[in-house]
Length: 358
Image (tube, rainbow, N blue to C red; front, side, top):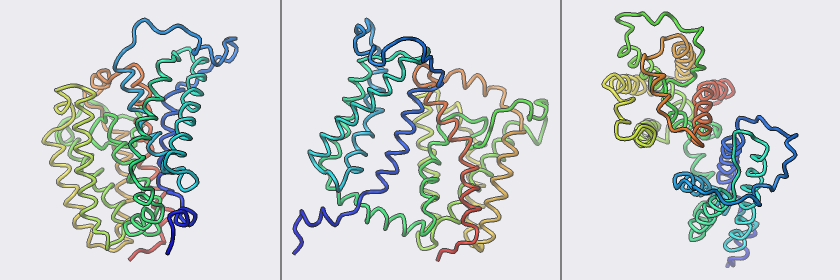
């Protein structure tokens, strides 16, 4: 009979939690210290913000954002420390690491002229870490054990584990507004655009249908290639697309208020989504080599089209309505995810060109 102490000794780390934690930390660091214009000769002490007086006005939105933003730190750190530390030992270590991590970023903001470090932010971040860790404590580490998570990923992606990261990034790439929904890979260069004075069949509606259907096909065929046939890829892809639509609905309400849905959803997008999924359905019956070729071709075509087709006349007005303040740095991060996703997908496709899954 194996005792609980022996189980902890033979348990493996939860690698998925560690991967998600690393991605999360990179996200927080980026959003906390952009635009990286440090003034190191300001003669300020790194801990000056701790001694500064409490701000007279404390926006509730900023406090809530700081708390919610650090919830994943506490939650993921509990599982990332397993099996070296668990339960209350992991909780105490998580709290200390959260204090140090948040405090270090506040200290770096001391040398950024566009950022204002504050002890209120530090307290809010720490409270977020505390709440996130408390959420994680009731779960047994085995509930998210490394072995179990690895088996699930293996059953879906086989040897293509990089496609799992691509799957996680795909919904995030849709948060930043696009000229047309799913229009990823757009560098935003005005010089590459063709004349905005176009007519049928290349009007706004047909452009949305073209980009949405092409992007849907790109996403679908990328994961058709990366997933095992036994994992029911069509069901997973349709679930992913549905989740992306629901996430976009939720985020647009936050970004643009009650009129958020009308800012991006249209009959053209629905038609493009339907056409794209229909093409994915037929691609499911093709060979893996054909799926790979369609993925590469559709991604390249998508990148070219989103960079040469004219902007929607209302697109720049839409960007001006995005929440500013601290959210501007998060928006910038999501914009970069949107840009690099198609290129990351092509790198994974080229890397795994000759692999084979059953």
